[in-house]
Image (cartoon, rainbow, N blue to C red; front, side):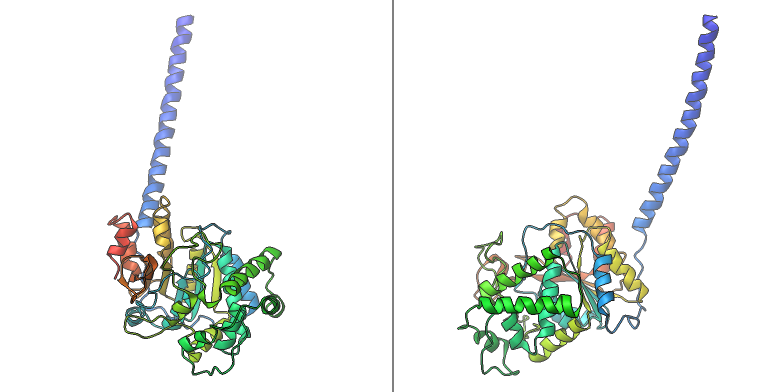
Length: 403
């Protein structure tokens, strides 16, 4: 009896082992199939939309649609080691002439960071622009800029409001950018004017536009404008309270606005009254949309891509600053970023513009690591194809294929 039960148990055990083996094999095949499909999808050729048109992009957005896009496209607030209240890229204009030869006006621009985007938007003339930054503070700084653009009758008032300094007398619309900022050399910051400007900005954003800013948002806007008021036009990336405080060679706001490309042409949005008014017009039509988003995140870039496809629009320029460098320091974030970009409608002219400190020529007699003229560009499709072909796995590889 015992032997019989043992034999029966062995048969029973063998039966279940065979049954489990079948299940395991089938499961493995399913997983393998899913893996193959996923790999194929990741490795599938990036669609190229050479014949797409931007005609269905809006000529303006109403306030409701503008805010809805901010809320629905954005990701949760993230962290970066610096507040980045202004650029530190003294050579940001150098790439403009060459990139302008590649891209057509009227498509979509994507960028990161604060004011340098206005100069690029002015130069590349997209129909709509998205500024995606991991920090909500950057979104709020762009809303602050939006309000100041809308409230200012000219460049002189814009500078006066941004830095909380009384408007100098005698400036005309024909004043050059050096003359414009020189007129503020002897004008001190004014705390009373700062408070007036904060109230005007609040009224513009929450009263005129009805944007539902939180108490924390208002405090952060105060923080940004207070730093501009404290330092004035000599504000640099290493402002008081910045983790980069004391770092040498950072260009001032004034220097950034007076800078030129390598041939001496100033593309800055404050270079002329006409340049200022063009960005002012875009701001008044709600066509510079700041978003909170991680370049490697699951939502923001892909949401912009979905919107672009809905409107049959192409990417013209994606300005990354040096964000790619940080992504290469964070595991596979760089791969996730390029796969996000691959979901955007692209063509052969779609161009990355990036900052590569230390790779360029020096700016005149200025000193400091960040005064290297170091802006570079590369075709977006070439980068994505190289990533998928595993031709590089670090930021140096990206820079090596950039001009």
